[in-house]
Structures are given as structure tokens and as C-alpha cells.
Image (cartoon, rainbow, N blue to C red; front, side, top):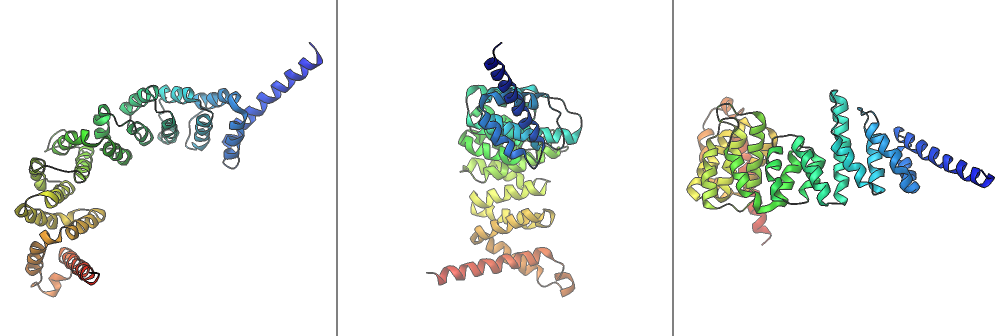
Length: 329
């Protein structure tokens, strides 16, 4: 072996050692981001060490180093490694470690959006059917395929995945209309013993339906839900009737919104206020009647009446907005 060969071999070994040191630096929260930049500059020779780090490294609650590895692999164009990682489906019993690894998987899924081909779609579809994760839903939602609608509908019942699932269903468009109607109308396993995830799914479906162009048949089918035992579902169904129903039905919807107001959380109470203001022309008569009914009570009874205070606030805001509108003309 010549000296030149020795030198080349020595240089090659030093190069591999340097890449491995950079991979090890991913574990440093202080130096990790810079290590990603340097690893990308190393080119393809950094892919295999990063692959080993991702596939055979130990998941943990501190997941940022593995996220950095995913980011470096994506920048290096290592789609196959990211797909291999997502398809590996590790079983992690520790809940903290599992939460951390799901964050890494979500990052990998989001970064795969840069390819958006059939291979990526098929891997993500298998993954979303195993567990609905936000990053997976976000990326597969970009394909806008009707075949994923049942998966997105199912994800509406998951607190973490609901937001991305709603956005994915918006992107699918009118193709999702029938499935959303069915989801809103179908308590699981039954109306008498509905699961919390089913309640969340139905409320979310109603929220999405309120954004759509509903036919007379649609809102009449949903009108029965204004009497649902769950106050959020009753409120969201009432908003749909108030939004697109016939005038006589709108007044019934306003009465139901006032009825469930004390039973819902602050966020939904704020939404109800916005709904009544948006449809105040239809709501005014009922609101005035309800205020007149509650006001004759003695001060001791009136003071804690949160519904009365709410209705008075709605009326004041509506009147103020009306005056502002006249002044600007």
C-alpha cells in the first residue's frame, strides 16, 4: 500500500468519524441545530449514520435530538429512510417515551409532504389507520382523496388530531358532505350510552357542517339534534337552524341556545354570543321576551341570573353595532 493510499484511507476514516461526531452532537440541545447544518453539508455520507441514529436509537421523553435527525434526513432527500422509520411501528410501553416518539413521527410525516407521491401516501394511510396523529393527517390531507374521509371522520373524536382532521375534511370539500351528516346524526355505540369520543366527533361534524351550504333537507334532518341531551351538540345544531332554517324554526333555535347557555363552557358561550349577534334580526324578539320575563324578578334573584346578564350584553352590543352602522352611512 502506497503512502498516498494510506493518506486517502486515513482521510476517509477521519471523514466518517467526523460525521459520527456530528450525529452525536444532535444530543446537545445547545449544538444540535448547528450539527444539522453541518450534517447536511456532508451530503449523502451522512444518511446512513443518521439512519442508524433514528432507527436504532432509544426513544425518550427528550425527543428533540431525534427530530433534528429527521430534519437532516429530509434536507438530504432521504425519503426512503423516513418511510422506513414510519413503517417500523415501534411498540413503546412507557407513556412519556411514547409521547416523545409520536412527536418525532409527526415531524417525519410533515416533512414527507415535500414528496407527496403514491409511496408516501400508502405508508401514511397505513399509519393513520393505526393511530390518528396530527402530522400524518396534515400530510395525507394534502392529497384530498375521498378514500381518506372515514379516517378523518374518526379522528374528529381525538382531542389532539381533531384540528388537522377538520382542516383535511375542509380540503376534501363537498365529497365529505354526506359523511359529515352521517357522523353528526350517529351516536356511538348508542344514544343512551354514547362514548366521549363520539360526542366530540358529532360536535366537530356539526361545526364543519355549519360552514357549508346546507339544503333544506339537511337542516331539517339536523334540527332534531337541537333537543340532544348533550348541550354542545344541541347548541351547534341550533346554530345551524338559526343560520339556514325557516324563520319560525329560527326562533325555536334561539330559545334552545338560551336554554343551554348555562350548561356549556366559556368558549362555546362566546360562540353563542357571536351567533346571536350575527342573526340578531331573527333573535331579537326572543331575546326581548326573555329579558322581559326575567327582569321583574327582585334584585336578589336578578343579580345572579347569568342568562339575563348575557342577554342584556348581547342586546347592548347589537344596538351599539347598529348605531355604528348608521353613523358610517
